[in-house]
Each structure stands twice: as structure tokens, then as C-alpha cells.
Length: 218
Ligand SMILES: CC(C)(COP(=O)(O)OP(=O)(O)OC[C@H]1O[C@@H](n2cnc3c(N)ncnc32)[C@H](O)[C@@H]1OP(=O)(O)O)[C@@H](O)C(=O)NCCC(=O)NCCS
Image (cartoon, rainbow, N blue to C red):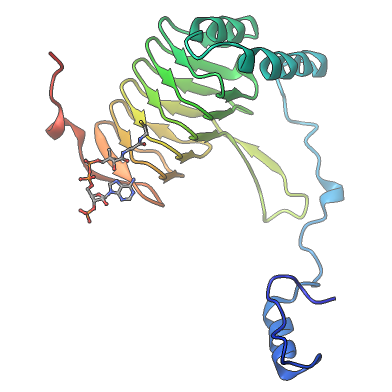
């Protein structure tokens, strides 16, 4: 059967030279290098029982959307019940999502925006006065694509005090973002970023020093 990737031009008959080139280049029916039947994450420690995780997912799915925009305190308290360490004055939007709260720490006065995802297979540690803007994805998980069994790998994410992760960024496993660093919108962060920098791009890199730009409020 022909792949939907590239529609056949209507004036070409089947089995032309064009088809042969396409099939050589894309080889859609090659032997898969993965054997996903051998995937095994029995060594991975989710940190709580299956029942507790299910309870958290139900509570998150029901309680978070039902709380008003301004009720960050309620959402923070619910996260604390499930083992998260959440500081004072933290703002958490109702559409933010947390996979395993017991692996999450958020310091005082930090903001977590709409549709932010804490994919916390491993620990995520966020400092004080940190802003994580809407749709950013904090991803502590990956896989070893070199293994046919597609082994799961996880790594801690740490974000220092006073950092800003702008909208729609991807932060990968084993990434540390130093204090007071700005990560520009739509950045892909796969390596750690030093403190006090303004960074952006894919891959995300430091572009300037933040300390040059600071203006004190008031
Ligand atoms: C990182 C950021 C704060 C930098 O702002 P700034 O210091 O005013 O920088 P400028 O807008 O003057 O941009 C300087 C240069 O960097 C580039 N640049 C800045 N941020 C970039 C990004 N995230 N990706 C790619 N290029 C970027 C600009 O295109 C510009 O390039 P040029 O010199 O070729 O014109 C800003 O770009 C940003 O990402 N804002 C976040 C917006 C957001 O997420 N809002 C949601 C929360 S309310």
C-alpha cells in the first residue's frame, strides 16, 4: 500500500520510476530497529502505589478545572496533600499539570502558567520568584533509541531563583537553569544554562548577560 506521506500525482501510472525512487528513499516497510514488545520499565520507581497515582490523576482532573482562576492557594494545598513541596505565595493556573507531585518542589512566590506541564518522572526543583510561562513543558523523561528495547531514562530538572522560562519552552532531563536566567519563548533547552544570562533558540544558548539589563522596581 502506498504511504500517505506523499500523494501520488494523479497523472502517474502505478509502478513508475517515480514510485521506485520514493520507495528507495523512504523504505517505509523496513525492519523496525525497535522491538517494543521488549520494553520494560519495571526498574522505574514511580514513588507511590498505582492506586495512589490513580487517585492523584482523578483529583487533578476534577479539582483543578473546577477551581477558579484566583484559587491558586487551593491548588497548592491539594498538591501538598499529594507530597509536593510548595512554598508561600505560589501562583498555579488551573490548567497546569503535574505528573507525580511527590517529585516536585516549588519555592516561594513563583508562578506556574496556563498549560504548563511538569512531567515529573524524576525530580523537578524550582526556586523562589521563578516564572514558568504558559505551555512550557518540563520533561524529565527520555528513551535510549540505540536500544531495541527503547529503555526509559530520567533526569532531574532544576531551575534557580529568579529565572524566567518564557512561553512554550521545552526543558529536557538533566537540565539545570541557573538563578536569574531568562529563557526566551519557544526555546528548546537540552543542556544546562549558567546563571544571569538571557538565552533563547533551538538549541537554546546564552546570548547576553542579564545583569546588564536589570532595572529595580519602584
Ligand atoms: C527573550 C526575550 C525576553 C528577549 O527580549 P528582548 O531582550 O527585548 O530582545 P529583543 O526582542 O530585542 O530581541 C533581540 C534579538 O533576539 C531575537 N530573539 C529574542 N528572543 C528570541 C527567541 N525566543 N527566539 C528566537 N529569537 C529571539 C530577536 O528576534 C532579535 O533578533 P534581531 O536582533 O535579529 O532583531 C523575548 O524575546 C521573549 O522571549 N519574550 C517572551 C514572551 C513570552 O513568553 N510571553 C509569555 C508570558 S506573558
